Length: 179
Image 1: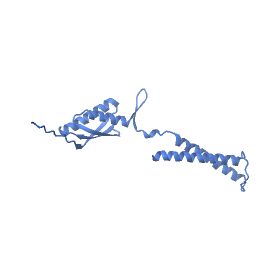
Image 2: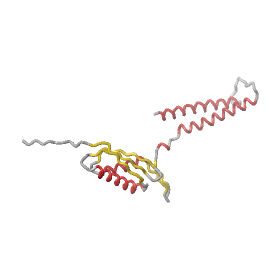
Image 3: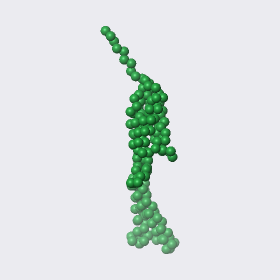
Image 4: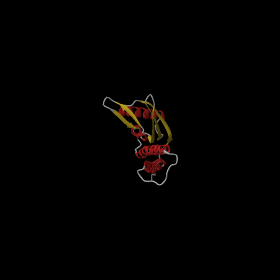
C-alpha cells in the first residue's frame, strides 16, 4: 500500500513541478507578457531559465518513474540457453517443490522457501507429519523427491533440500461399539 501511495505522490509532485517550470520558462522567455522585472539584469534571467529547465527535465524523469511498471518485484531464476533466455519465477519453483513433497505419504501442511546460491537452489520444506511413519525415512524421501523433481523439471541444479518437521498431526481414534 505504501508503494502505491509513494507512486501517487511522485506522480502529483512531478506533474505540479512540470507545470510550474513550464510557466516559469514561458514567463522568463517573454512568451507570456509579465508585469514584473528582475533587477539583476540578464544574468538573473539566464539563471532562472536554467533552473526552470532543470526542474522541468527532473519532473519529466519523475513522471516517467511514477508511471512505469516495476519489473524488479518479481524474483526469478534466469538461465541462458542456445535459443535465448529463460526466466522461472521463484513462485513456480516453490510450487514444484510442494508438488513433489506432497507425493510422499504421511506428509501434510507443506510450506516451501527457495534461495538461490552459487551452487544452485537451496530449498527449505516445512511439513507436518502424521506420526505413523519413520521420520528419517519420510524426510529422506521428501528430500529425494523434491531434489529430483525440481532439478529434472527446471534444469536448474538443486544444491540442498532441507526438511523441517514442524509438528505431528493426531489421527482421530474411533472406538466402535458392539451391541
